[in-house]
Length: 434
Image (cartoon, rainbow, N blue to C red):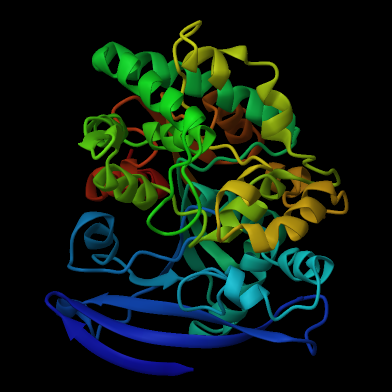
């Protein structure tokens, strides 16, 4: 359904909403909505351009909201009309939050509902939308950033007839690695990022240890609810994977303390800034399905928590006591988060059920990918903290015809940081100009 169309400088935006089955295996069952925003360059608003559909990273985050004709969008709009897809459960699609899940009768009902929010369902949604917008016989090009790239690999596995081309930035998922293999690699990468951070800002080592020690000895309420635990503070290292991540953490830390009525205390400004860095409560699909988004026929069983025992460098108490430097964690989900984050607490039961669930269907078809005929161009980042380069290169070798660009010019957010150049090179690779 076409909702409305309007124009901002340089862009024409058209809003669409689609009804799709919650469970594509039961097309006549419960329905949800998926929202998508079509974007065209104002100068080409009447041109008959092919479609490019964008899959956002995450999981659990809505598509970008365009503010102007810049970045990767500017390059894409030279050749395409772009569809910014709010993947199911995100943005203006039927949302998944602690509020909306409260309508379900039990943690088991919540978990059963959430089982339908992985990449396979997202791709099935995209196919219904493609049929509605372009027609069943007209394939489109897909661009996937990070987790969006995982979705594109699922698309190539299960519905390649819907794709004229595929572009993947920082999102070549491991096809057959265990979730434990993935988190071991992530911990190793995160240690490396910590060392580089403290090399750049050596003064922050003692400062961060002081903060952790204070949080272990005091109850510190957060402005948005709940408390700031030391282990929650340790999670700010998740930002180290972006090109501006070191600076964002450094500037946050420098505002950590003020002198209050009873001496040094944690600064309210610091608390607000830290909350703004952590989106688990506003985007709970990430916390609930981040580990399951890797699972095929096996349970995650809280992999990040289990693998942590293999990396004593992250021992928080050793750091606070001065026995070892504090190391920040990265893109990991822990069971304690459903205690420490106030608005994740109502979802703790569902999270436990999902972590124990071993019935996840396959997301990728290695035989289909080995026989792939869709043109594919991908970029992997040499220093990517979130997607292990060795695994990405292995996947690239398993997808027939995939052209891979490996670079250390960018971090994981290369598409956001220098999107016009990154996408331009991938498009040139796709058609054989590079």
